[in-house]
Length: 436
Image 1 (cartoon, one colour):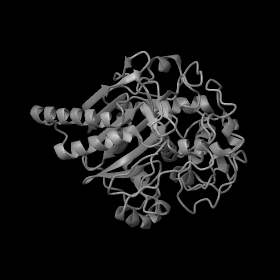
Image 2 (cartoon, helix red, strand yellow):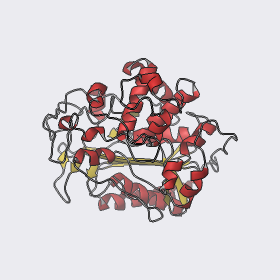
Image 3 (cartoon, helix red, strand yellow):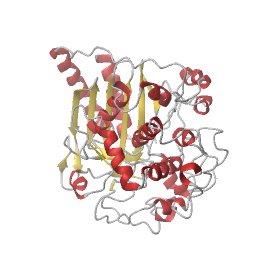
């Protein structure tokens, strides 16, 4: 669930017959671009492009003068304070990086309102659909390694385990063109989920582990796969199953993702303290409680305590939820983006170029979605990234490719009307653009 800038048109998801569908689609932002998206319709999104892309222009590698840096930090601090007040002062982490260097960061608000525990730079937040960008990058890494093929039906990896496997390809999963109906709204799955059109699912248990088999009961034949772009959490759930199968199981996949992310640690090592998909006791000690309301101006509920969870709710992140696999700090998310888009530590420039190119299906509807990533325009700056929201949490992170600047905001609040992290991020992006 998101809002676009004035330069863009957006089509936010609607509640439909199951509120869960609305919330899960809220794991990310729906984003479109104008003329740039239309022009991109002529491009074929392929790793086998004939001409290598131009590397992102990272700008001046030398640090700004101290006085200029202090002025920028002061303005960002002020903008953060104003924007935070506008969305009810949630717990927040915000980070600005440039060319592998930490330029500015801030932590404010409460990680736990009841205990009055403040947010620090070590507090963990749910990334929600920002994680789609991360799992998409790992999938493309597997393509580069020759483990996966973008345009082979996924039956090569899954056999008949998943409906539509003989038609759907990896590219369709990555680009939201698979055509899979919403598995979370299916009667076989919805009763076990925390939110439906009638409230809490009748059989929701925040402590009961999930398996892909349980979700697969709600995955049915896709509708016209490849024909159009429609945001699909189900496609990313299937993507996770493909990755697990080809890695040799869930534990092997987790180890492979950890090794992949280690390359991004420029400011701090990319350990589980920075990015995690484990719902461990260590993660619980550092995790922000998430606060949400399902009605306009309604009271906030704590996602950790509302349904009696003994730890981190099992639907919040982690396998098998590869539509929102990761949690972590704002710095962890920023280091990932910087390594991906600026320093090219995770994928080759050629692969990144294919990843960020809007698909013809997306461009046909004035969209900007490529493979697990999309564009945003604030003022005269174009940012590449992804948004996310899930009850209790919201996130937004993107990179200004022309200048090598990455901005990330994570917050422990979600409402039906707005994504706090998105509102704050936009104000910070405007402030940076005018101050730099």
